[in-house]
Image (cartoon, rainbow, N blue to C red; front, side, top):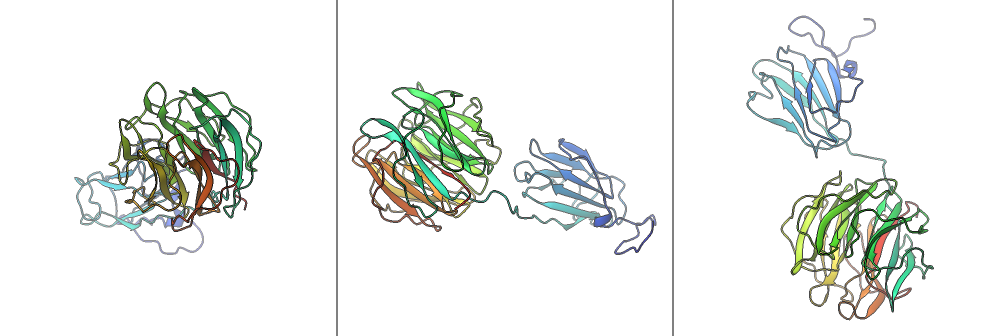
Length: 423
């Protein structure tokens, strides 16, 4: 050893303990469900696929130090679990379960003595910065006018809807759309007179691609949302009865085959991203109008039903706002409604907020401008009757504004999605 020794301590054995900067970091990222740790080492722990139980040294000495880091920011989904292997941990004996469950966390522990055992000297979580700027523009696509149409309308970063763009792809209604790949979008499934599973990709200039052959069960009344920051999920809908199956979309826009359904099978649901990397499906119809929800984690796994909050309804829609929150609004309860429900960045749905704007159903919704949202189009005179082109902007606090005069073809059963990270 050469050079200056700073802030090192002697172990009981007389051997100098390593400083954090002098730790011997393991070159292999730990992905297994178990790890036997060695004093003086640092470990990158990747819990994307499973939790990891770490067994600490049984014959620890004063000054022994070990550091663990959340490699993939997934400890909140699959925890880091500490087995202190007969020694105390923060003064508690080995019968206690110790786990760490915060995304982006790092854990620096040092062995003190037999009384207190291993003590964390830091267990901080770092914020994820510099990734995936929010989408700035939006696009509305397809729907029913006097007949099925595949016309689209672009929305700029100020929430202004453009005039009709000549349609591309199969004209249909009751499809769904979501962002993927950071700055692009995908529309999929829907009703052409019968259910289809065709999809259409949208590039970061808002240009819709031609039909892509369908994957998974064809269905209508489906919903879609972004999750994991750059992926999407389609779920629920109707195909020879209500469904709860889902289809994941990777960051290249490729749709996967059906995943077995979780939660109440239903149709005409809404879905939206929240919390920066998660999603939520909500509301819908199944032998009555539902208000229940299903959360989706950052791996695209759908959770079981959460007891509903707010007015049960179908044919509503949802969009994210303020970067990590969401809003469900409008819909059909046996008549059109304009009621809305905010969603926190933890996925908690709030009680009803009195409706603003024209009551309607079968409309589209998307985020725009980085932190705002827009609802537009829809049935205005009953389910399947009368169509509008008006829109309602949502500010960064989740407040819905009054109607803005419609632009483009009035229609319903429409889908929308955000795209482009450039204003």
